[in-house]
Length: 157
Image (tube, rainbow, N blue to C red; front, side, top):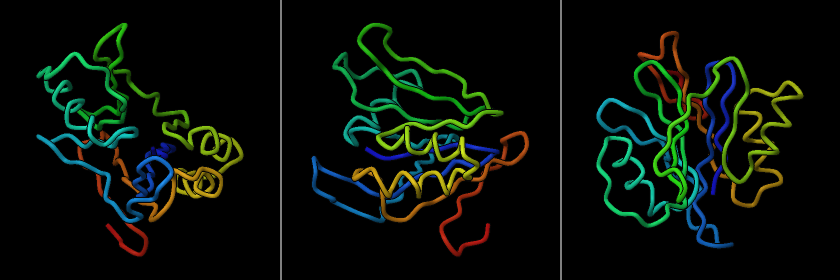
């Protein structure tokens, strides 16, 4: 899995990829740019492409997906997923609240409730959640969300 946190115009996410309890990669860029939209996912990597396809209106299969994510689209931040009962779904994230998804979600939300930034929240989650770790990156969402920039540690956008 992973941890993705949002607070005050910043999305933070880790770079760990796991296969079961094995760390497969600890510096994987999880931000996906496609057709002018930006995606971040948690769950099974094999399902990310299918979920993006459904976002764009192409349903490839009826099999359950083990993934959900965030998309920056048309001036909004939304969570997307697909489940058996309702099929593909998309919910707008309330930008004035802290928000998190993934295996470290509870740790990240608690950290943000205590005053942590989105990046600090993912760092806190990485201390307790074995599926969260590696490089913590941020996606800064500018006013109006028309322009977003990616920041890795030590990089100025």
